[in-house]
Amino acid sequence: MIGDYKGNVRNKVVTALLQAYLDTLDYDGMKSILREAGLLELKDQRSIDQEQQIDFFSFKKVISAQNCLLFECNDLLFEIGRKFSFYLFPFGKSFEESINEITTLIDTNWDVKILERNEDHVTIHVRNCIFCSEIGISCDLFKGFLVHTLEKTLTSDERVGYESQNEDPHDPDHNTFTITLKIEKKK
Image (tube, rainbow, N blue to C red; front, side):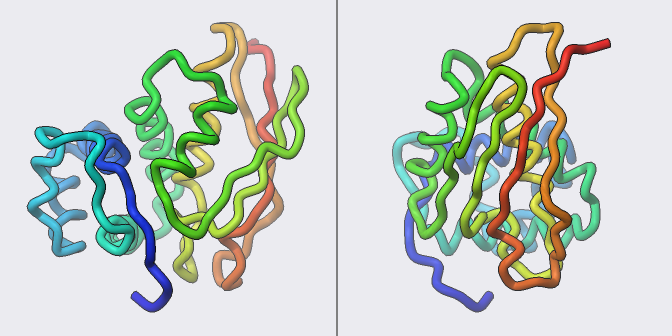
């Protein structure tokens, strides 16, 4: 891995991501990602202090291993992102609070900003998304996270779709993007 990987990630984030792997990929799938990352000891992460943190480089190794093993499994990555949202922020937070908190919990050189919000859509700008910074990797995990984080704040008769510019995962700057989350009535 080439790059600048300074920063820290709260154990709460790692635990939520591992639980999302467990739900989506089962125990063996989660272990495969951790083994590929060389961090198999994290499989018992749930039993440690959630306010402690790991270095960003270790977290990035997990994300890189995930992206390597699940290359072009876009729907699966999107579903992992949805589950990650559920486990990281299970209830009681507004969308804005969740967006602000994730950039605090993952303290590194990235940013997520809400550009516009009204009753039928939310436009978000993501700079240096840490979940898709490798060349060739789409940002489906974080898009799934954003969609589900907004859906949790809506009524049961609403759902969220999204639009984003056509991203070229081979463009080195593809991890900076704008996404519009559209709030729609269920049919």
